Length: 158
Image 1 (cartoon, helix red, strand yellow):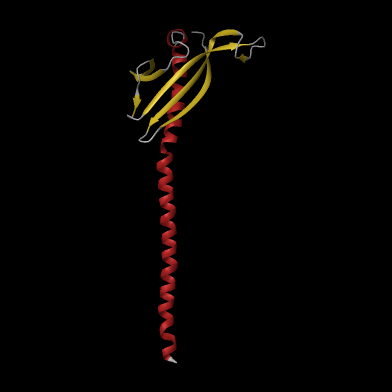
Image 2 (tube, one colour; image 1 turned 135 degrees about the vertical axis):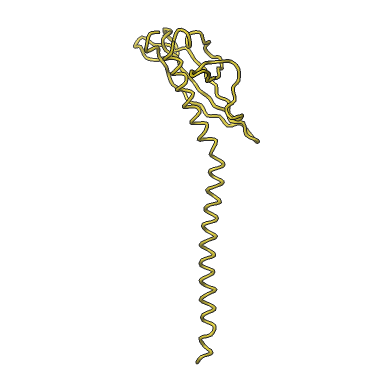
């Protein structure tokens, strides 16, 4: 009777090791997938945050002087944002962020219809501009772009 129980302990150890190995392998595969996903999408998050910051920078330009900072800018022209001496400025010189990202903005004229709603044609509203901020990421294989838009108005009348 003693000889019949000798192999069962070894089988239990092998089955236990197999279960632990499958668990560890599954955890490693999940971790590997997470790392690949995070690396692939890290630029998407940075692009979105830089685009939002661009909209806020244009709003700060508006707040510090519509007549001096927004009105002189040509509609349809690509401008970059430069931060110097504690304020934002627009420039036509390309500015790279971290050597990888290029952020531009375009201002467009806004027209209003007879009901004072924004329309594709009608009366030009000199106190409203459409802003499109685009951020481009230079990658090894391609360029990724994110764009967001909003309207700004001359709320301070300056």
